[in-house]
Image (cartoon, rainbow, N blue to C red; front, side, top):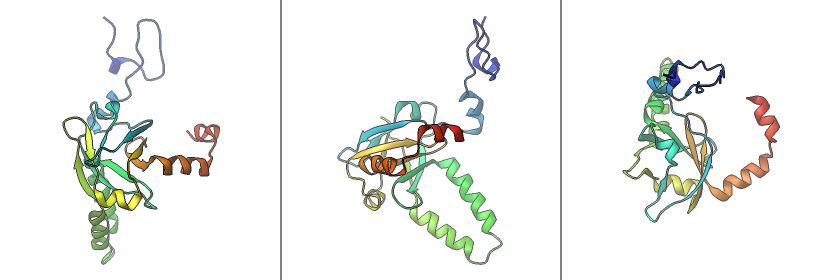
Length: 173
């Protein structure tokens, strides 16, 4: 009987009869889910976007959405991860008079909780769509443990403007 994916070493041992380790399985207990790739979608008439099947499978159904720094896209974080990050930020700010309350107001006031519907769509808040200029065509950009939702044309232009070569990106990995 071949070993289960969890028993296979992650060192890349691909001897005959062995399967490579399932990297997602090693993170399941910690609530970690990978968002990889670039996916183009269209918003429907009700402001919903279909999340890619590979992002939905085994992943969270609840998200906190807010603007990215700079306000050019919508950031979607799994709700549990958002809560952990928020708790950490508030712990750090706890010793500073007034800063904790200001952070709470800024973060909570700009964030919205959303949930995937039964077909895997997210309803995007109108105020975030207006702030980013997203109208119909969107780019869903995987960012490992979160993802961003961009206006497709704006994302394409940003990638052209940044013109980071693939070799530099992969060298950083």
